[in-house]
Image (cartoon, rainbow, N blue to C red; front, side):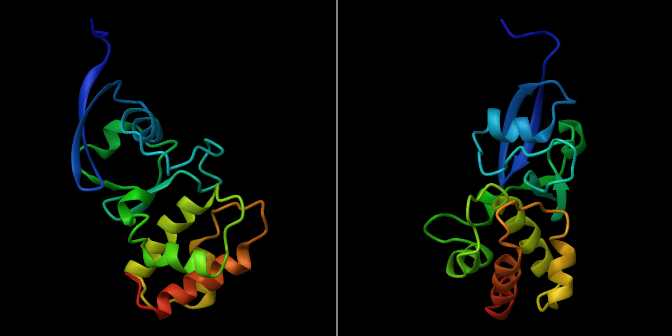
Length: 160
């Protein structure tokens, strides 16, 4: 028998509608990972300071670790999985691979989401604009310069 404290919530994720049974204040990241099986969005710090959990909500970069489910009601959420696939990766993901910009890969999904959002609003960013857009992402591998080069390469390729 379902817990009476739980309610049905309806979310639009990566273009598909889903019904989930959970509390309305459940952080979005748990709904994505645990209810929908979308593991690309990573839990990092839980305090909006690392960027690993970044998703797009109505095309705006949003930290899913502290966004309650009720806050995305009626809004479109896009995860890194919604930006491309293994067969057809997003141009930013392709550029990151070509530049060999990811080492452990833990931070990369949030970086791909942030870079895709940047290129959607600014198709030809300067290096400074890329660095500013990625400033909230922590990468302990030290691949920052390669990541910036990859985003700039994706922009040259016409990524949107």
